[in-house]
Length: 507
Ligand code: XMP
Image (cartoon, rainbow, N blue to C red):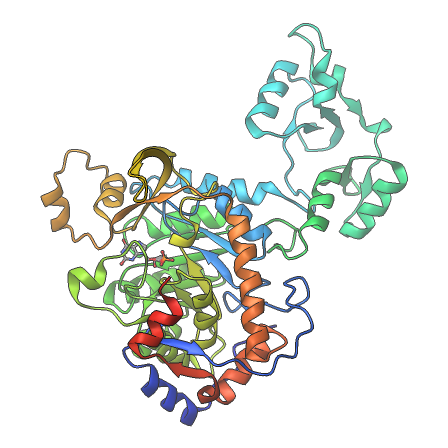
């Protein structure tokens, strides 16, 4: 398990002094003797803790924003070794849509499918076709009313079926012609059986013949193709969801837990608050064992406050986010590097990880976030405009500065979750005017972002750059670089003058 190294209090005090009032672009790191023959993300250990109980192989989490993370983004993040948090940008009481996003992720890939889609033998084949179309699966397990296995029905069985009156039992492959496994099975064993018997589906039953699960060749192949993927004990992709701290949050949590969400995020703008205090107490009473991230905070007191109330991870960042206007509208917040160092020192000695949330625009800032204090990092705007980001593509006319020609450029919208637009949608206040909404205290904005390929490419590029940072820093893994950095931070840290900052980061 990759834990952030413990931080020596004397060294920590010196770093706290140095980073006061500073953020990512105020520093550059001094190159060290490199020990890596290759900068290959497949060979370099980038693993980290997301929460006390969840390890990631890649230190990236996509933000719970309604223009960033829904099921398609969460799937890509988990496949690439990180995790996506489904936002709660739905109207109060509208819990189902968020639950469905979680279910979509959980059903994308399996090791063993514990509750495969099933149908009764007497059902019509039209019903079976409709269920296949709705659930987007090509195989249904046929079971009796006590869930005993009777057969398998695939799309192929329906292809030449004539007449709507035909029933499932007439078209299915009956149990006696199936290869069936009794009892539990490891994925390796399942692969061996399926290879030997040349089958694509292996139903699992107990001694009474009751269906226990289904293993499919497609899932096994996918598992092998994604060696870094973040999976649960059943080989399914992991996913998180945000719930807030008031209103329907406990009911929402209960529904999400029922859908087997892997981690919940109690996410409010100011997590060091009486609202959070009450929310955490109630949450822990109801869900003592659910992995739970709480935030956001940006001070040592804030971080300790969440740790003391049972958070399994602390999300750090007040105001650094790309779609965020908190600092402009309130003059409160903490520059992100200072916040990360202060919170790291505060959680030192506990096993509660820190999620560095917001402000990572250039890839190099990720390495800084992970050295200064983050076990992993949450990113929003970096993934905006990608294929997997929710929202429609809008073509906008843009004037090219060189030729003054007008061209159509495709954009997607990124909006802060506290922006007027997001609040309007969440609260269903179509009629309210901007003034009334501003009175609610908007702390975010809406930005158009040019569309740009898949988030998968961005994650992979970021991981390559992170490996390069590790190489420049003289480490052999993310963990080792953290250890070297905190053993002697002054060897690494160069505080930039204004002109050095321009030379480094202005392009
Ligand atoms: P980046 O910089 O990666 O940051 O886009 C993502 C984080 O920004 C936060 N966020 C907001 N903060 N008002 C805020 O003060 C908002 O409207 C808002 N929307 C998102 C959030 O922490 C996210 O993970």
